[in-house]
Length: 279
Image 1 (cartoon, rainbow, N blue to C red):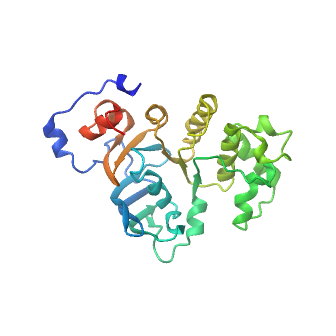
Image 2 (cartoon, rainbow, N blue to C red):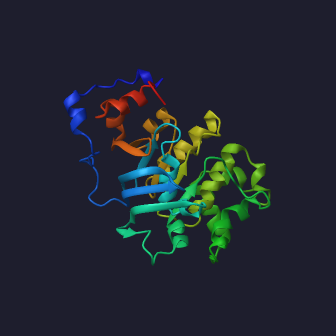
Image 3 (cartoon, one colour):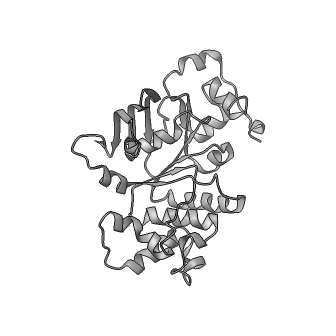
């Protein structure tokens, strides 16, 4: 249980002074992405209230917090998926390599190619084969790679799925187990060669064995990709993430290296959440 984690309580004065989450001293000078004063609405309801948060290059950043705190909305803002919902709107900036992805001259389709998304529930296209599922994103974007077979193999090897499916590529993607389907969906995202991979509760529908496989995959992918993962599982965040951000009621309460968040958080609210006092 998380309660067993040894949390070193800081003084009340330290907590009071840490109103704005500080940039960890070990972080690189230029993050891969950065949200600046990011606000998001569904109609009149404000669900993100001025989030400023870096996403460091080739690391894993976990977003934690109770249900309804804005975690999923935040990552959907990172690749301009929030705006496709009727009545949704965004204010503030999201920088990708210093370019504001919400600038008027930026094509959201190109943003989504650079910033891929893996959803909570595995969603392979049921009418497509395993091979076709891997290539689906490319076709939707009008891309025609020269060697599709090489691309399919490379993407499936990246998610450690090739040896399991290489002889059944013509089967439906939905014929696979839940964990295999989720890795297939990750392969579909990787086939587009994104720079950032967003994962919204990618293991919540999986059994412990499949969850372990996905977590191993995250460790391997961090060498090449920048990853942001939303999770309710505190142990998972502690296992996979380099940095962790704690959201509460649409606000960023605290952001730091994961070991700091889980052993000596600056904010009492963070400590209370991690130790299960609420959430």
